[in-house]
Length: 318
Image (tube, rainbow, N blue to C red):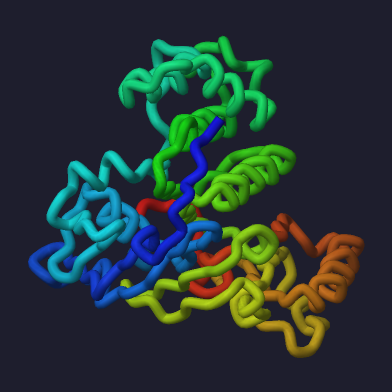
């Protein structure tokens, strides 16, 4: 039920021109001279470790945050100068899901159409509910929904009868594996219908599988802008965290595997390429048979573990 955007000219590109933003009187540089052109018909992922400036960039596009310098252009208009226009043409799913107390899942989505003054709301709402396969919970109060369902509701609120530009900040966090795929498929559907789709995520495997292109931010700077085929083992890796009760067991670690040791916690953190995972798992199983492992955790690829250091995801960023 979404409207096809027919004009595919360059004016329909989202043009980010030398955007910079600092906080704390210039001491914290959230974005540093970022330039990029985002086209309709492609899903573009923004990746980078926590604090790299991803959310700040989205907030500047929608007009919540004003850049210190630079401009953001769409259809010949400046979003920096006309933030009201930006909020009319852009829909954003925030990093944390919208509060849903006092309304059902369905009512929360309907409320977005009321705010936009869109008629025929039942058709739009039922379409997205069915696409995401969340009809079973459609009339459940928001406060009784799981974290994953609240996240899906927030996604639905952002894409129901969407405007030309869609910004999504960690849309698949806490979502079950089946519906994670549905969310990405819906993003691709939006792109095919001519929308600009920008998605912040830490999950590099999903980026590699579903996105057309990625922008890699590091310390506020754009350091890569490439097709997803350019994501390689330098970025895409896995992390195996192990707590041991015997340090002697580390002597048999497979060659070429990168390891970090935290002695006070008796902890090892291994950074693994896809090819190294089988050998590392076999080594782990041998340790477990010797009862030398207290706890372990294998985490699939994310920027926090592969590029930005050994930190957990889902932290807020500037």
